[in-house]
Image (cartoon, rainbow, N blue to C red; front, side):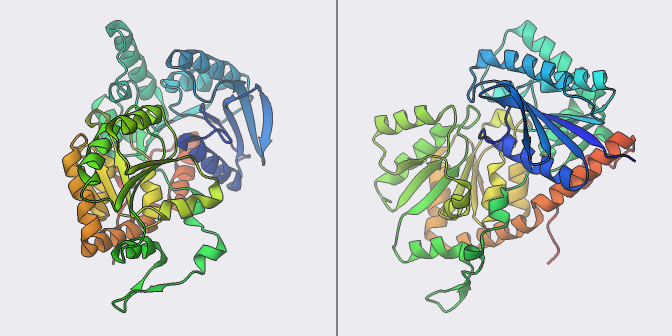
Length: 425
């Protein structure tokens, strides 16, 4: 066949920050490497068309941090721009802004293209996790319109088994759903040479410890702080109060433990104000760091922290998990049971789950990793193993396969076949 073409639609694309934009660029570049013609419709500080390598990027004017009332206007501008963007064999809609699947359906129909929906967040159900309550008649319309659009998609790629389960329960045919997990940043999978050649560190006990274990050894030797790292967006679906409660419990008796936030988000300012109100000296904030410092930042955490509301289960899957696994860090997940994150850390024994709004349970889990080396190293080994399985290469390969089968009209195996599997020992 001739060179196939794909059009991606998402509000965020680099240099704008955000996990969906980073994932989109990685995927777009993989499509280019496989011989596809790739276009992206997104937002930016000004409207226009530019090139990112061989990728054509069409931008409509839009703010980095739009107000909630601004999303419908952005949605409409993306729809209009995408319809004018030229030929595409495949239209891939994402989920920022919400309900973009509706625009993707219209665009694909106008271009006589196949429609693949990349479900990073499952709307309108995700509105509950964000505690965004809309009038009943509007919610009824959104539920009905979303269901119709999803069932009409040629293929839907979700990022978690819990999400696939919710879509199937809402009437989307299982044959249309594939589970392909997200992936960590390239800088974490392919570290610069100076990190690769660092070698191994001899412990006091005479054993060998990989580079990714070094920060924990510092804690055993009463060195710097034991760092609980939250890296990434602090959004409306993330119950940050749980972290504040845990920090309060640990502050007095364990001054060697610190909670560090690296990133941004709608709730970061509220979190900072609450820290001051409670007088918590064991919480620190660090802004986003440049890409070349990413691995250093991620390795600085002795354990990584992920929080998620119960109501988000099956509607959202935080991608920060994959970055933690890529650097071999134990994960403490304060979130709902049965979510994709819960499955992964259980399958690989890569961390601990606590209830999403139980600060005491979170504090207890942190202490266990701080005080018990066997627990830390067991989870560290599990995280390393998971990081070998959940790689960009595997996800990209699955993506290209699904994209080709979609434009060729081939049927795929059920989503369960795509779930991450632990490598044989």
